[in-house]
Image 1: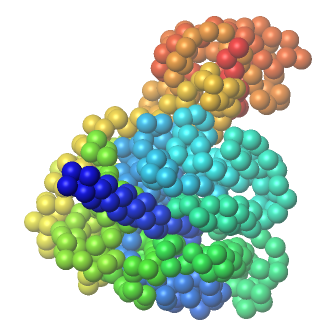
Image 2 (image 1 turned 180 degrees about the vertical axis):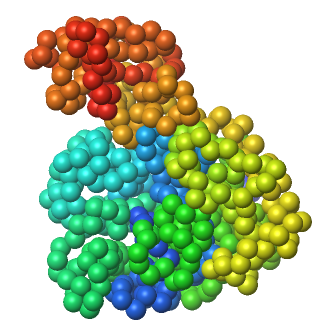
Image 3 (image 1 turned 30 degrees about the vertical axis):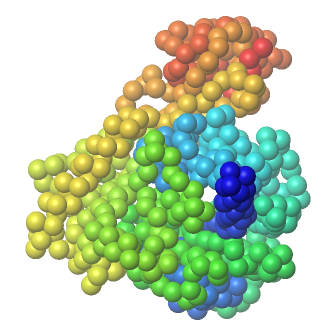
Length: 565
């Protein structure tokens, strides 16, 4: 009898193990395709009769549409929230450049969470959450990282790149492949999918079109110009025509590999369009907190679980993607992980616990600075109402809201989706309620990290030397503090470092290095570009400039390379 019971227990254990293995093997694949500056109106299916996007339109018609899907009005904040399920102000991402686009290395990304559960993870395209350790995509959970640096191709530090011969980085190595950037990113993603078709995989496919510069072969843009579309818009539509062809290639390959049914594909954009083209009558464009700047296309196809052509008008946002994918993969969210998003899966599957979405409140704020100020270019959005405060103040360096006489507008989006009628005077009780919610949210964001950007770690085995880019990573918009110029870094172990100016046109006789309140000056010959200094361990701002023999400093706008010796 004892042996029988033992055999029975072993049989049960075996069945459980088989069920667990089968469950893991049946986990869905995930593909997120997120374009750059593609507005709500940049799809034929959204009423644009000039654009030509047949593959995307067909995909939309067989997918679930989240009709009110919100992001940030600019790209890096949206990407931080997508990756972490958290509002960007928690993560170190505060803006898109000038030191404000560096995510802290201890932020936990969807790629890390999926990788740790057996998923193969790859990024192809735009990252824009930091170019140095520990914030690069390969540091944040991506096993395969094929991307461009900075916020766009052709920006510093890779200014000599263009869309037809981009400078890309593959798993830490610089490469200069020939080919159009969008084609290259889709090629990389398709190779990754084929290689890992027998494993659960997560592909983050983030082409940088139709972001400027507007570079596309004439065979794509000229047909639109011949139809009377102005030249710059014709190039944008040409870039999206090429994207559409590549998107069709992706879907066809999933079919060929018999991966269609259990692959969850999301198509979305990171923010509204640049102004001057059709945007489905939505007010505002890129950088605006009106609907035209923050409401984007969002379609999801998962044939195995989601009914085709479903439509959900519940508002959702970028912060909801991470918890949704984790629930779809039956992965438990770590208890110590503070998320702002919630899973959309109940909405997608028409489950009863989706009813709580009607009481939801979302927040958006965009300031072109590291310093953050309450009510500056901000919104509070509920299922019905939207409060907008100081919508044209994003570029004001010394902004301060008059809390006794706030410049706010209130819109009833259920009746006024184009935000034409301000109801703030008629509904002061709603304004008061939304103000209270916003002030609590802003305080919570401030308490997280004090609105500080992420730290670059210098002299580690993971990256040595480190290229510090002035435009993308060097502080220039840090409130009014004249000393807060340079790069925020952590040196974990002090020692001897070589510091080089990467641009030889910045001439001088002395290189000055400011670190932890001390300025070290080193003489160097005109034929030299580097000096050696001792840097102590610690955290703070490091800055580098050159001077002549009379102590006159040259402009500080140049990149540097720092290497631990």
